[in-house]
Image 1 (cartoon, rainbow, N blue to C red):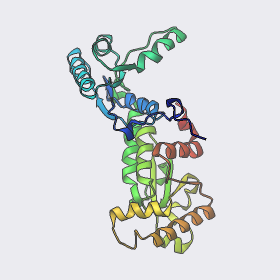
Image 2: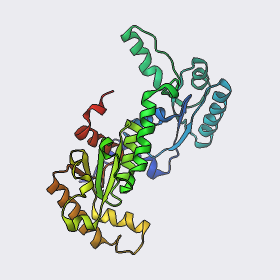
Image 3: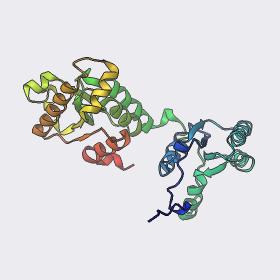
Length: 291
């Protein structure tokens, strides 16, 4: 039997493998982080790897026209219209991008704000950016304090003030503790310390005494030994520290210790920092998942 080779039976074309050029713009009157985060979440549903262009602080019609020229030039060069995610509050600036660009414009604010205005029966404040005045924002102040805390308590540098920690991450070196700590601080205002489990801890068979009284705050990270060896070899090539034998021993010893101590843990091997952080918040600080 001959297989049906009609177009309908073929999987969607993947621009990442066919060489098809595709550009996505993130245009905002603020930092552009909201547009990029939301846009990337949507784009992840498609098997494409587009070129990303973020254009923040587009807060005048002159800047809007400059972006429009860039979008239109990209459309001409690539032979297809770019996708443009916008978070623009000013209607005049938004109109320039919508009416003059040759891109597929996705207006992320008005898509949601207009229905919500109708639902709540009130008009939004049309405020640019996340905070109207960071100097008076307690949320912003808390995030800065959390970042400073994470930096001061990174990689076991200090065991002082651990009573103030919301979370203490433990795990072998290079298992993802530092980036997770910083993400928790910057994104959620969580004071996260992190402590590397070392051979001396495994020989004692228990977590360090400095952490013992804070076990309820501890959360463990582990990682596939092969992945760990590759990461460590980038830092210390051909060392015992990076050898696959040592990585296997440390990972096994770390998991055994965390199991013995009753510390919840997960593998960072195939999880994003966002997934790891959300799991930690769900298990240790579920109140921080509500705002």
